[in-house]
Each structure stands twice: as structure tokens, then as C-alpha cells.
Image (cartoon, rainbow, N blue to C red; front, side, top):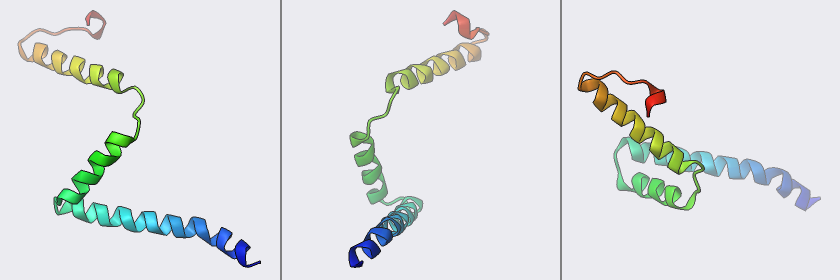
Length: 80
């Protein structure tokens, strides 16, 4: 019976801990502390992001289109 209480309580405790950590990191980020940036870099390094290459190519193509439009040329996305 004692173990059942902890099993039911554990997910809520984990949720509360994650919420407190998130609140703390948000406060650090608002104050532009290095801890928030270091944590973000740490998470970015160790969490796999699917379609990274595709997202990078999309960003580069978008920048190229903006440059071409600034030079006076209007291009279509099908041309790229």
C-alpha cells in the first residue's frame, strides 16, 4: 500500500520539479544570464533534431530570395 502511494505521487512530483526548473530558466533568460544560454546549448547538443539539414537549406534559400528581391529581381520558388 505504501508503494502505491509513491507510484501515484511520483509523476506529479516530476511535473512540479520540471515546472520549477522551467520557471527558473525563464527568469534567468529574461535577465540574460549565461546559465540559461548554457542550458540551451547543452540541450541542443544532446537532443536530436530531425530535418536539420532541410531546415538549414530552407533558411538559406529564403535568405537568397530576399537578397534577389532586394536587388530588384522577383523570383519564383520553383526556379530555385
